[in-house]
Image 1 (cartoon, rainbow, N blue to C red):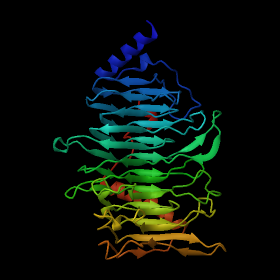
Image 2 (tube, rainbow, N blue to C red; image 1 turned 180 degrees about the vertical axis):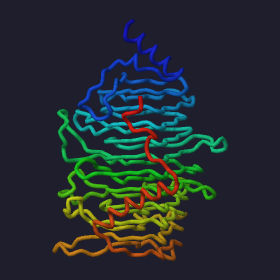
Image 3 (tube, rainbow, N blue to C red; image 1 turned 45 degrees about the vertical axis):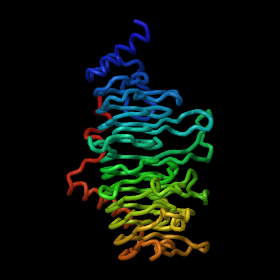
Image 4 (cartoon, rainbow, N blue to C red; image 1 turned 45 degrees about the horizontal axis):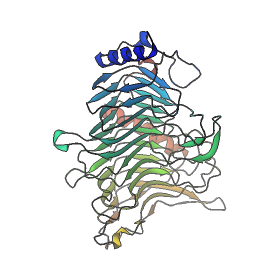
Length: 416
Protein backbone atom coordinates (compact mmCIF):
# COMPACT_ATOMS: atom_id res chain seq x y z
CA UNK A 1 0.00 0.00 0.00
CA UNK A 2 1.51 3.37 -0.99
CA UNK A 3 1.74 6.39 1.30
CA UNK A 4 -1.36 8.09 -0.15
CA UNK A 5 -3.42 4.95 0.40
CA UNK A 6 -2.23 4.63 3.99
CA UNK A 7 -3.24 8.24 4.64
CA UNK A 8 -6.71 7.61 3.16
CA UNK A 9 -7.23 4.57 5.39
CA UNK A 10 -6.05 6.53 8.41
CA UNK A 11 -8.46 9.39 7.74
CA UNK A 12 -11.39 7.02 7.22
CA UNK A 13 -10.57 5.19 10.46
CA UNK A 14 -10.51 8.46 12.39
CA UNK A 15 -13.91 9.52 11.16
CA UNK A 16 -15.36 6.27 12.47
CA UNK A 17 -13.58 6.45 15.81
CA UNK A 18 -10.34 5.66 17.67
CA UNK A 19 -7.96 2.79 17.15
CA UNK A 20 -5.13 4.25 15.08
CA UNK A 21 -2.10 3.04 16.97
CA UNK A 22 -1.56 0.25 14.43
CA UNK A 23 -1.62 2.83 11.63
CA UNK A 24 0.98 5.16 13.15
CA UNK A 25 3.29 6.49 10.46
CA UNK A 26 5.95 8.00 12.72
CA UNK A 27 7.61 6.30 15.65
CA UNK A 28 7.90 8.28 18.86
CA UNK A 29 10.97 10.44 19.34
CA UNK A 30 11.67 10.47 23.09
CA UNK A 31 13.94 13.54 22.88
CA UNK A 32 11.02 15.77 21.84
CA UNK A 33 8.51 17.22 24.33
CA UNK A 34 5.35 15.25 24.95
CA UNK A 35 4.68 11.67 25.98
CA UNK A 36 6.69 8.93 24.30
CA UNK A 37 4.00 7.55 22.02
CA UNK A 38 3.65 6.56 18.38
CA UNK A 39 2.73 9.70 16.43
CA UNK A 40 1.04 9.76 13.05
CA UNK A 41 1.77 12.15 10.20
CA UNK A 42 -0.13 15.47 9.93
CA UNK A 43 -3.87 15.10 9.41
CA UNK A 44 -6.25 17.01 7.13
CA UNK A 45 -9.86 16.68 8.31
CA UNK A 46 -12.30 16.94 5.41
CA UNK A 47 -15.36 15.37 7.03
CA UNK A 48 -17.19 16.12 10.27
CA UNK A 49 -16.95 13.70 13.15
CA UNK A 50 -14.94 12.84 16.24
CA UNK A 51 -11.18 12.36 15.93
CA UNK A 52 -8.87 10.79 18.49
CA UNK A 53 -5.19 9.98 18.18
CA UNK A 54 -1.59 11.15 18.35
CA UNK A 55 -0.18 13.32 15.55
CA UNK A 56 2.92 15.37 14.94
CA UNK A 57 4.46 17.64 12.30
CA UNK A 58 8.18 18.30 12.16
CA UNK A 59 7.77 20.86 9.36
CA UNK A 60 6.94 24.36 10.72
CA UNK A 61 5.00 25.11 7.52
CA UNK A 62 2.59 22.20 8.01
CA UNK A 63 0.01 22.21 10.83
CA UNK A 64 -0.37 19.04 12.82
CA UNK A 65 -4.12 19.10 12.10
CA UNK A 66 -5.84 21.14 9.40
CA UNK A 67 -9.62 21.36 9.67
CA UNK A 68 -10.92 21.72 6.12
CA UNK A 69 -14.66 21.24 6.57
CA UNK A 70 -17.59 23.30 7.80
CA UNK A 71 -19.16 20.25 9.36
CA UNK A 72 -18.88 19.97 13.17
CA UNK A 73 -15.54 18.46 14.19
CA UNK A 74 -14.51 17.18 17.63
CA UNK A 75 -10.86 16.54 18.45
CA UNK A 76 -10.60 14.80 21.80
CA UNK A 77 -8.38 12.57 23.95
CA UNK A 78 -5.40 13.28 21.69
CA UNK A 79 -1.72 14.26 21.80
CA UNK A 80 -0.33 16.79 19.33
CA UNK A 81 3.13 18.20 18.84
CA UNK A 82 4.65 20.24 16.07
CA UNK A 83 7.11 22.88 14.91
CA UNK A 84 4.26 25.02 13.55
CA UNK A 85 0.56 25.39 14.41
CA UNK A 86 -0.97 22.35 16.04
CA UNK A 87 -4.57 22.98 14.87
CA UNK A 88 -5.47 25.36 12.05
CA UNK A 89 -8.71 26.00 10.22
CA UNK A 90 -11.03 28.50 8.59
CA UNK A 91 -14.84 28.46 8.49
CA UNK A 92 -14.96 25.83 11.22
CA UNK A 93 -17.35 24.46 13.83
CA UNK A 94 -14.77 23.01 16.19
CA UNK A 95 -14.54 21.42 19.61
CA UNK A 96 -11.13 20.54 21.09
CA UNK A 97 -11.20 18.83 24.46
CA UNK A 98 -9.09 16.67 26.71
CA UNK A 99 -6.15 17.10 24.32
CA UNK A 100 -2.49 17.86 25.04
CA UNK A 101 -0.44 20.01 22.69
CA UNK A 102 3.31 20.60 22.69
CA UNK A 103 5.09 23.32 20.74
CA UNK A 104 8.45 22.25 19.31
CA UNK A 105 11.35 24.48 18.41
CA UNK A 106 10.55 25.51 14.79
CA UNK A 107 14.24 25.45 13.71
CA UNK A 108 13.64 27.98 10.93
CA UNK A 109 14.82 31.56 10.45
CA UNK A 110 12.58 34.19 12.09
CA UNK A 111 10.16 31.53 13.30
CA UNK A 112 8.46 31.11 16.66
CA UNK A 113 6.54 28.16 18.15
CA UNK A 114 3.15 27.55 16.57
CA UNK A 115 -0.32 28.13 18.01
CA UNK A 116 -2.12 25.39 19.81
CA UNK A 117 -5.17 26.63 17.94
CA UNK A 118 -5.40 29.17 15.09
CA UNK A 119 -8.88 29.54 13.57
CA UNK A 120 -10.55 32.20 11.45
CA UNK A 121 -14.11 33.07 10.39
CA UNK A 122 -15.46 30.51 12.81
CA UNK A 123 -19.03 29.32 13.30
CA UNK A 124 -18.50 27.82 16.73
CA UNK A 125 -15.56 27.05 19.02
CA UNK A 126 -15.18 25.14 22.26
CA UNK A 127 -11.70 24.57 23.73
CA UNK A 128 -12.09 22.71 27.01
CA UNK A 129 -9.84 20.79 29.41
CA UNK A 130 -6.76 20.91 27.21
CA UNK A 131 -3.07 21.10 28.12
CA UNK A 132 -0.81 23.51 26.21
CA UNK A 133 2.97 23.54 26.66
CA UNK A 134 5.42 25.76 24.81
CA UNK A 135 2.93 26.90 22.16
CA UNK A 136 2.00 30.44 21.16
CA UNK A 137 -1.51 30.01 22.51
CA UNK A 138 -5.00 30.21 20.99
CA UNK A 139 -5.90 32.71 18.29
CA UNK A 140 -9.47 33.33 17.13
CA UNK A 141 -10.05 35.75 14.23
CA UNK A 142 -13.64 36.78 13.40
CA UNK A 143 -16.91 35.03 14.11
CA UNK A 144 -19.71 34.27 11.65
CA UNK A 145 -21.83 31.83 13.61
CA UNK A 146 -25.52 31.92 14.52
CA UNK A 147 -26.05 32.86 18.15
CA UNK A 148 -29.70 31.78 17.96
CA UNK A 149 -28.44 28.23 17.40
CA UNK A 150 -26.16 28.45 20.43
CA UNK A 151 -23.00 29.05 18.44
CA UNK A 152 -20.37 31.05 20.32
CA UNK A 153 -16.85 30.78 21.80
CA UNK A 154 -16.06 28.89 25.01
CA UNK A 155 -12.48 28.59 26.30
CA UNK A 156 -12.78 26.75 29.58
CA UNK A 157 -10.65 24.81 32.09
CA UNK A 158 -7.47 24.70 30.01
CA UNK A 159 -4.01 24.36 31.55
CA UNK A 160 -1.36 26.45 29.82
CA UNK A 161 2.39 26.37 30.48
CA UNK A 162 4.84 28.79 28.83
CA UNK A 163 3.22 30.83 26.07
CA UNK A 164 6.19 31.34 23.77
CA UNK A 165 6.62 33.89 21.00
CA UNK A 166 10.43 33.85 20.96
CA UNK A 167 12.03 33.90 17.51
CA UNK A 168 14.74 31.39 16.63
CA UNK A 169 17.15 30.98 13.72
CA UNK A 170 17.50 27.96 11.43
CA UNK A 171 19.56 26.13 14.05
CA UNK A 172 16.88 26.66 16.66
CA UNK A 173 18.92 29.18 18.60
CA UNK A 174 17.01 32.04 20.26
CA UNK A 175 17.51 35.45 18.64
CA UNK A 176 16.45 37.58 21.62
CA UNK A 177 13.36 39.01 19.89
CA UNK A 178 9.75 37.87 19.88
CA UNK A 179 6.43 37.90 18.08
CA UNK A 180 3.35 39.20 19.92
CA UNK A 181 1.43 36.11 21.04
CA UNK A 182 -1.12 35.41 23.77
CA UNK A 183 -2.50 32.46 25.68
CA UNK A 184 -5.89 33.58 24.30
CA UNK A 185 -6.56 36.29 21.74
CA UNK A 186 -9.88 37.24 20.19
CA UNK A 187 -9.38 39.40 17.10
CA UNK A 188 -12.30 41.33 15.64
CA UNK A 189 -14.89 39.06 17.22
CA UNK A 190 -17.71 41.60 17.26
CA UNK A 191 -21.09 41.57 18.99
CA UNK A 192 -21.13 37.88 19.92
CA UNK A 193 -23.22 36.74 22.93
CA UNK A 194 -22.35 33.99 25.42
CA UNK A 195 -18.57 34.13 25.00
CA UNK A 196 -16.80 32.79 28.08
CA UNK A 197 -13.10 32.49 29.01
CA UNK A 198 -13.03 30.89 32.44
CA UNK A 199 -11.29 28.58 34.89
CA UNK A 200 -8.07 28.49 32.85
CA UNK A 201 -4.67 28.13 34.54
CA UNK A 202 -1.92 30.02 32.71
CA UNK A 203 1.65 29.92 34.01
CA UNK A 204 4.68 31.45 32.28
CA UNK A 205 8.23 30.81 33.45
CA UNK A 206 10.93 33.43 32.88
CA UNK A 207 13.46 32.29 30.30
CA UNK A 208 11.09 29.66 28.93
CA UNK A 209 8.29 31.86 27.58
CA UNK A 210 7.53 35.25 26.05
CA UNK A 211 3.86 36.21 25.72
CA UNK A 212 2.43 39.65 25.16
CA UNK A 213 -0.79 39.77 27.18
CA UNK A 214 -1.98 36.42 28.46
CA UNK A 215 -5.56 37.29 27.45
CA UNK A 216 -6.06 39.95 24.80
CA UNK A 217 -9.32 41.20 23.29
CA UNK A 218 -8.58 43.11 20.10
CA UNK A 219 -11.55 45.00 18.66
CA UNK A 220 -13.85 42.37 20.16
CA UNK A 221 -17.14 42.68 22.00
CA UNK A 222 -20.09 40.92 23.52
CA UNK A 223 -23.60 42.35 23.58
CA UNK A 224 -25.44 44.56 26.08
CA UNK A 225 -27.49 41.60 27.31
CA UNK A 226 -24.65 39.06 27.13
CA UNK A 227 -21.19 40.53 27.72
CA UNK A 228 -18.01 38.52 27.22
CA UNK A 229 -17.24 36.91 30.59
CA UNK A 230 -13.59 36.48 31.62
CA UNK A 231 -13.67 35.03 35.10
CA UNK A 232 -12.00 32.74 37.61
CA UNK A 233 -8.75 32.39 35.67
CA UNK A 234 -5.35 31.98 37.33
CA UNK A 235 -2.60 33.85 35.48
CA UNK A 236 0.94 33.80 36.82
CA UNK A 237 3.75 35.42 34.91
CA UNK A 238 4.38 37.41 31.74
CA UNK A 239 8.02 38.10 30.96
CA UNK A 240 10.19 39.40 28.16
CA UNK A 241 12.36 37.11 26.04
CA UNK A 242 15.23 38.38 28.20
CA UNK A 243 13.46 39.23 31.48
CA UNK A 244 16.48 40.98 33.04
CA UNK A 245 17.70 43.09 30.11
CA UNK A 246 14.58 44.02 28.14
CA UNK A 247 13.33 47.35 29.53
CA UNK A 248 10.65 47.94 26.90
CA UNK A 249 8.51 44.83 27.42
CA UNK A 250 4.80 45.64 27.24
CA UNK A 251 3.17 42.33 28.13
CA UNK A 252 0.88 41.57 31.02
CA UNK A 253 -2.21 39.82 32.32
CA UNK A 254 -5.47 40.87 30.62
CA UNK A 255 -5.85 43.60 27.98
CA UNK A 256 -9.24 45.06 27.06
CA UNK A 257 -10.08 47.57 24.35
CA UNK A 258 -6.98 46.88 22.29
CA UNK A 259 -7.02 47.97 18.65
CA UNK A 260 -7.30 50.99 16.37
CA UNK A 261 -11.05 51.08 15.86
CA UNK A 262 -12.45 54.54 15.09
CA UNK A 263 -15.93 53.06 14.65
CA UNK A 264 -18.17 52.39 17.66
CA UNK A 265 -19.57 49.29 15.98
CA UNK A 266 -16.19 47.51 16.12
CA UNK A 267 -14.59 49.05 19.21
CA UNK A 268 -14.08 46.69 22.13
CA UNK A 269 -17.01 46.57 24.49
CA UNK A 270 -19.48 44.72 26.72
CA UNK A 271 -16.92 42.74 28.69
CA UNK A 272 -16.90 41.61 32.33
CA UNK A 273 -13.57 40.65 33.98
CA UNK A 274 -14.06 39.31 37.47
CA UNK A 275 -12.69 37.04 40.20
CA UNK A 276 -9.46 36.33 38.37
CA UNK A 277 -6.06 36.00 40.01
CA UNK A 278 -3.33 37.86 38.10
CA UNK A 279 0.13 37.43 39.58
CA UNK A 280 3.52 38.90 38.63
CA UNK A 281 2.74 39.76 35.01
CA UNK A 282 5.40 42.48 34.56
CA UNK A 283 4.07 45.59 32.80
CA UNK A 284 0.45 45.38 33.93
CA UNK A 285 -2.08 43.13 35.58
CA UNK A 286 -5.30 44.32 33.89
CA UNK A 287 -5.69 47.16 31.40
CA UNK A 288 -8.56 49.01 29.76
CA UNK A 289 -6.86 50.74 26.84
CA UNK A 290 -9.94 51.63 24.79
CA UNK A 291 -13.56 50.69 24.24
CA UNK A 292 -16.70 50.93 26.30
CA UNK A 293 -18.86 49.06 28.81
CA UNK A 294 -15.93 47.07 30.17
CA UNK A 295 -15.93 46.27 33.86
CA UNK A 296 -13.09 44.89 35.97
CA UNK A 297 -14.17 43.82 39.45
CA UNK A 298 -13.28 41.58 42.39
CA UNK A 299 -9.96 40.47 40.93
CA UNK A 300 -6.76 39.79 42.86
CA UNK A 301 -3.89 41.61 41.12
CA UNK A 302 -0.57 41.09 42.90
CA UNK A 303 3.14 41.27 42.13
CA UNK A 304 6.44 41.44 44.04
CA UNK A 305 8.13 42.95 40.99
CA UNK A 306 10.71 40.19 41.21
CA UNK A 307 11.47 37.01 39.29
CA UNK A 308 11.28 33.69 41.16
CA UNK A 309 15.03 33.92 41.84
CA UNK A 310 14.64 37.34 43.46
CA UNK A 311 15.92 39.44 40.56
CA UNK A 312 14.12 42.75 39.92
CA UNK A 313 11.82 42.82 36.88
CA UNK A 314 12.89 46.02 35.05
CA UNK A 315 9.50 46.35 33.30
CA UNK A 316 7.30 46.02 36.40
CA UNK A 317 4.78 48.85 36.02
CA UNK A 318 1.17 49.02 37.23
CA UNK A 319 -1.46 46.71 38.70
CA UNK A 320 -4.42 48.06 36.70
CA UNK A 321 -4.90 51.00 34.40
CA UNK A 322 -7.59 52.79 32.46
CA UNK A 323 -6.13 54.91 29.69
CA UNK A 324 -7.89 55.96 26.52
CA UNK A 325 -4.84 55.46 24.32
CA UNK A 326 -6.57 56.35 21.04
CA UNK A 327 -8.59 59.25 22.48
CA UNK A 328 -11.82 57.49 21.67
CA UNK A 329 -13.64 59.74 24.12
CA UNK A 330 -13.01 62.66 21.76
CA UNK A 331 -14.41 60.99 18.68
CA UNK A 332 -17.90 61.56 17.37
CA UNK A 333 -19.59 59.39 18.38
CA UNK A 334 -17.20 58.49 21.20
CA UNK A 335 -15.80 54.96 21.48
CA UNK A 336 -14.47 55.25 25.06
CA UNK A 337 -17.05 55.43 27.83
CA UNK A 338 -18.81 53.62 30.68
CA UNK A 339 -15.86 51.57 31.91
CA UNK A 340 -14.98 50.65 35.48
CA UNK A 341 -12.26 49.23 37.72
CA UNK A 342 -13.76 48.57 41.13
CA UNK A 343 -13.56 46.42 44.24
CA UNK A 344 -10.29 44.73 43.30
CA UNK A 345 -7.46 43.72 45.65
CA UNK A 346 -4.25 45.21 44.20
CA UNK A 347 -0.63 45.22 45.29
CA UNK A 348 1.84 45.97 42.48
CA UNK A 349 5.48 46.54 43.38
CA UNK A 350 7.78 48.84 41.44
CA UNK A 351 11.43 49.64 42.01
CA UNK A 352 13.05 53.05 41.90
CA UNK A 353 16.49 53.41 40.35
CA UNK A 354 18.00 53.32 43.85
CA UNK A 355 16.38 49.93 44.52
CA UNK A 356 13.70 51.22 46.86
CA UNK A 357 10.17 49.92 46.29
CA UNK A 358 6.77 51.52 46.05
CA UNK A 359 3.31 50.31 45.10
CA UNK A 360 1.91 51.42 41.77
CA UNK A 361 -1.50 49.82 42.06
CA UNK A 362 -3.68 52.01 39.84
CA UNK A 363 -3.23 54.47 37.01
CA UNK A 364 -6.53 55.80 35.73
CA UNK A 365 -6.16 59.05 33.74
CA UNK A 366 -9.28 58.24 31.69
CA UNK A 367 -11.46 57.33 34.63
CA UNK A 368 -13.39 60.60 34.63
CA UNK A 369 -16.91 61.93 34.82
CA UNK A 370 -16.61 62.96 31.16
CA UNK A 371 -16.10 59.31 30.14
CA UNK A 372 -18.81 58.12 32.56
CA UNK A 373 -16.27 55.73 34.07
CA UNK A 374 -15.83 54.65 37.69
CA UNK A 375 -12.73 53.53 39.61
CA UNK A 376 -13.54 52.96 43.26
CA UNK A 377 -13.60 50.53 46.14
CA UNK A 378 -10.24 49.01 45.24
CA UNK A 379 -8.18 47.77 48.21
CA UNK A 380 -4.41 47.91 48.49
CA UNK A 381 -2.37 44.92 49.61
CA UNK A 382 1.22 44.49 50.71
CA UNK A 383 2.98 41.78 48.66
CA UNK A 384 5.97 39.52 49.25
CA UNK A 385 7.06 36.12 47.99
CA UNK A 386 4.81 34.33 50.44
CA UNK A 387 1.83 36.37 49.20
CA UNK A 388 2.42 35.19 45.64
CA UNK A 389 2.83 31.57 46.73
CA UNK A 390 -0.37 31.75 48.74
CA UNK A 391 -2.29 32.69 45.60
CA UNK A 392 -1.59 29.26 44.10
CA UNK A 393 -2.95 27.59 47.24
CA UNK A 394 -6.02 29.83 47.03
CA UNK A 395 -6.51 28.86 43.37
CA UNK A 396 -6.30 25.17 44.16
CA UNK A 397 -8.79 25.64 46.99
CA UNK A 398 -11.19 27.42 44.60
CA UNK A 399 -10.96 24.52 42.18
CA UNK A 400 -11.77 21.99 44.88
CA UNK A 401 -14.68 24.04 46.18
CA UNK A 402 -16.14 24.48 42.69
CA UNK A 403 -15.33 20.86 41.74
CA UNK A 404 -13.55 22.07 38.64
CA UNK A 405 -10.87 20.02 36.87
CA UNK A 406 -8.38 22.08 34.88
CA UNK A 407 -6.59 20.42 31.97
CA UNK A 408 -7.25 16.93 30.64
CA UNK A 409 -9.09 14.62 32.99
CA UNK A 410 -6.26 12.12 32.45
CA UNK A 411 -2.52 12.91 32.58
CA UNK A 412 -1.03 13.54 29.10
CA UNK A 413 0.89 10.25 29.02
CA UNK A 414 -2.36 8.32 29.53
CA UNK A 415 -4.06 9.76 26.45
CA UNK A 416 -3.60 6.93 23.97
